[in-house]
Length: 321
Image 1 (cartoon, rainbow, N blue to C red):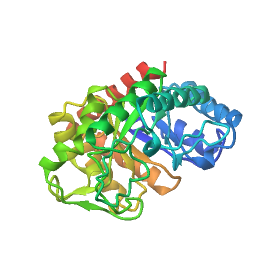
Image 2 (tube, rainbow, N blue to C red; image 1 turned 120 degrees about the vertical axis):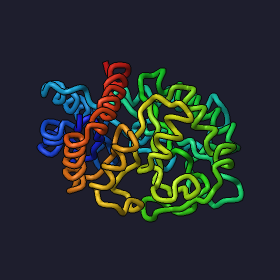
Image 3 (cartoon, rainbow, N blue to C red; image 1 turned 180 degrees about the vertical axis):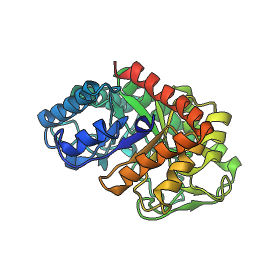
C-alpha cells in the first residue's frame, strides 16, 4: 500500500541498481522520466520495458511510467520524436487532436503510459503569468475545449492524461520551483474562471489531476494546494465529484518548505492518491518510511489508503493491461 502511493524519479538510463531498489524494496507504484533518463528511442523503450517487466517479476502491479510531454518548452522527448511548439501555438481543435494522437502513439510505443498533460491553467491577459508560455490561449472556455480535446485524444490512444495544476496557477507570477507563490483570489472568481477547465476535465474523465504548490489564501490560509485537505478533498473530490487519481506536484520543489514527514501526513489526510518525489535523494526514503508509519498506526488513514490503492489499481487495470 505504501509503495503504490509513490511516483519516484531516479538517475540513469537503464534498469540499474537504483531503479531496481525503488521497485523491489520500495515497491513504488510508478516512475517519472526526465531528459537525463532519455538518450534514444531504443534506449528509452528498453528502459521502460525492463522496468515494467521487473515490477511484474517481483509480483507487483505494473508500473505507471510518466513523463511531462506538453510540447513547447516542457517536452522531455526531443527529436527524433515529434516536436510540437506547445499549447500557446495551437490554433484550433484539430491542432489539439493531432498533438494528442501523435504524442499518444509515440509514448505508447516507448512503453510510457502516463502523460503529465495537458496544462489546464488560465492565464489572464493582464497578468505576467508564469504559465504564459505553457497555456492554451484564450478564456477559460477555450482552455476547457482545447484541453479536453487533448485529454480525449491521449486516452483514446491508451495514455493516461493528467490535468494540471489544480485549482489553477495561471494568475501567479512566481515559479513554485523556487518560491511559494500566494494567490488571494476569491473563491467565486476561481469558480468562474480557473476551475472551469478542471471541471471540464473531470467530465471528460481525465485519468489524473495534479495539484499545484500554490497557497490559495482564501481557500486555505494554512496549506498550499498539494497539502490541503480543503482543496484536494473538499473542493476536488466532494464539491466537484472527481473520482480519478489525484497527485501532488514534485515534492522536491522549493515551494515545499516542510519536512517530508509533515508533507506525507498532510497528503494522507487529504486523501491524495500519489505523492511525487522526482529526484534521487533522501526525500524518497523519508517519504516511503513516513507513508508506512502513518498507515500502520492510524486506522483512518489506513482505510482511506485502501481506497486510494483501489483507485490506483483500477487505473492500471484500465490502461496498463
